[in-house]
Length: 611
Image (tube, rainbow, N blue to C red; front, side):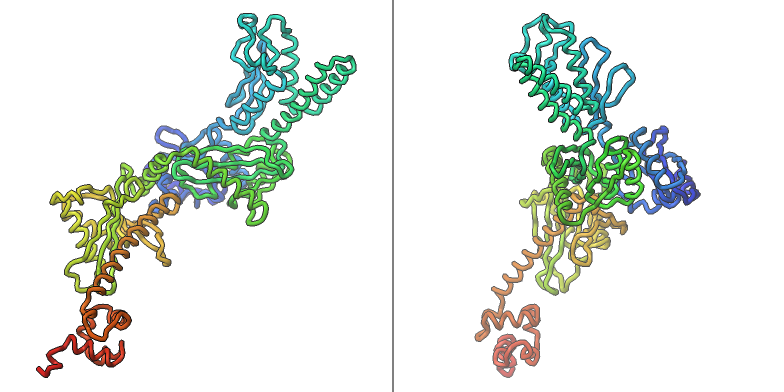
């Protein structure tokens, strides 16, 4: 379908809740979303493309056709959306790692010597499956703890193939394994311990511990104290293992705390599990690509994926931000686990402290997993995509004009390479032949001089930028384009736009198309830093020039005019030139009459001599 056909189809949709399924020319599902009103939501994709994020624009450009499924309610649309995302794993939806973070424990009970392993999905192959659990690392800890508690083999030997072939390994000598590789070991004992492991994984902790307690007491009564001590230690291990297994499975935690951090290169979703007020476990998932969606949309998508399909859920889930679809999500989770699950967004107090802790964990995970070079590379890649550039910009040059009224007009050029300032390439310009302040004329002169120096082979201006940032709006950007065209150069140009509080708000191209940069905080911070640095560099040079002109001005040579009177004159007239041209009456408005006469007589010696 053409873009216009897609737009027409979107406008023909009903104002009903439902799910929309975007597909490309190969019929691959690339995005799944839900809507309270299908017509309103889907139509937004094909209108005002400039306001979309780079990711959304890329997705829309790939849409060949789309389908919709009408639902009876927003809740049904939410459930259907979750199901379709899980089935199709669309590349433009925000996705947790495809079940890699939340595995099953597989036990090959059909084998003569059953073995544990971690798998992503359950299969109908005769094995027993337990889960899904939390993160892969936490689940592996459960398997390791099971083997330690039941003294099952931890080595890589295959049974019964390797029985009797080699001496028992170090685990047996350390008392961490019963040594089933020894010919004298009974297979029945292995099976007995495997059955105990199954009971643990089924949640029958109390029952198993009670049986072991009875066996321990019997062994003690028969004076088999070594066996009784072994059973005592196993009971303790079982109790600890049971607690950990429940927490990792999500069936014991009474409160989960969700944290989220959007980094420059990666983002992180964290869930802290609390039991009776104590932190018991942590799950986290790193998202490898920069996230452009709003924080609320991202957290909502991740929460639905993380908790969807789990049978055991906590009583309350603390969230770092309010979800637009909080009501249907609450209902979906509550119905899935059979009890009320409250979604809470705290604003202050102890619960807010927990959110801060979860967010801090997310930040630390991102920092740990992301190198400085990777952060900068992803940052410049994101900026390049925002600006519509084929390659990420490496060298950015930024320009700003500063003046004091019509005097001391100067300009600054700052250089950022890979997002970091390259101060040795900074340059100052003093504007020439400017009778009055003219930002556009000043910018034209500065850029003309800069690129003429490049064309003349001046080594100080020998490197061309990949993109120009001009402090100002679209008109400033147009001036820069005019200069570049005259020089025979083609370099992307964007104006750095400020808000009413003089803070960076957006970028704008020469055609007036505004590019919102706040959707990716790291890009927003970079552009703001460039604008502030360029402005600072211009202001410092302008102040230096002003102080230099004051220190060496003609006012210093007038008898009776000290530092205080000189400052008063310049504050009133703005320049020495204006002081010199002022009539005596106006000078007397700025300083005392005797000082005014001295100044006037100094600049008008002929009138004083009667000539």
